[in-house]
Length: 408
Image (tube, rainbow, N blue to C red; front, side, top):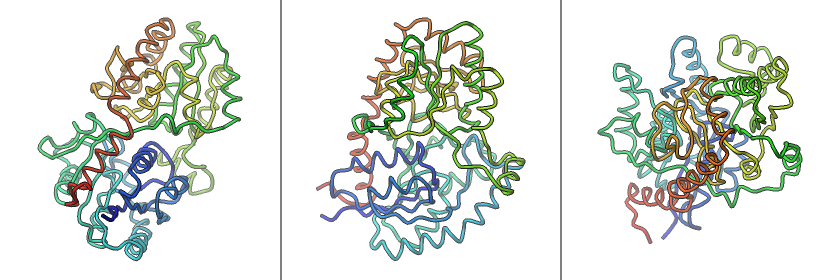
């Protein structure tokens, strides 16, 4: 039996949580099960996706954003101009895909912001089926024409809808069939030999309580709240060190970048964070490491992970850290038991609250036995829900179901 021919549409060029999750699951498919082609925006994702299959790199791919946090309103409507400008590049990428890909079984869109591209791809590539992977919490305003349009597209264009967890599932229509397939992580493959990271992490004080942050430096990721929590805990006299693994998504320079920053559509958060560290004299407590592929070594250096995102939802670093016995403090109002059990696998705090974040950090820093118990419970949850082999097999079964192919 020939492999399933799957065209993956990934809309972001920077290698982040969504691209890492896709990379992990495709890498875990049995040899010969899937013939992968990636249509993606240019960026750091190219290096990773090219290890798994053919890659068609576009200058940009048009999106339509109706996620709970970043849906269009006010000045954000100007972003639509960028998506219109990306339309020629989107069409050119699909033309190239049609030349390379014959007899496509499945189009897999790696976020529901790609529904417009899916509509074009279904008519151009003529796949047997389409899968939409919903990774962000969707906007649930039923009175909005945008929400109604997204719901209609999911019903009419997707043969299967996959949600990454129960938080995301709860934001989709209750009567829509949705398969919850958790993201996955292979901790044994997360080790690399990054000597510079080893040296920097080795300089941390052995006796300090170490608080980690993993992600792009964006305001919506809660990095400013984390820096304020570092100041509050320092003033309270706690012996803490903060390890920040991440950087700006892209360099911010030139007239165009300056105009986007004025409009609030592009950020230079690294500079803002550096200024805050100097202003509050936090250089000895907050260490900005930057990006690294040696993520296992990073998690092994932490006592607790902080995920203070404004999205009011758990993120990938939570279960990555859990595989290494590290509990999390997560900004989420209603945690779901498949990702975080408050008081058992970690602590839930309100989004945008540096005070609550600081109090949660202090609670774990002053009770390290509790921290260790939570870390063990988090590890058990991660092994139960986020095993890469199990979740890759579940996604492959879904592929075969919607493509009308039985397992060999």
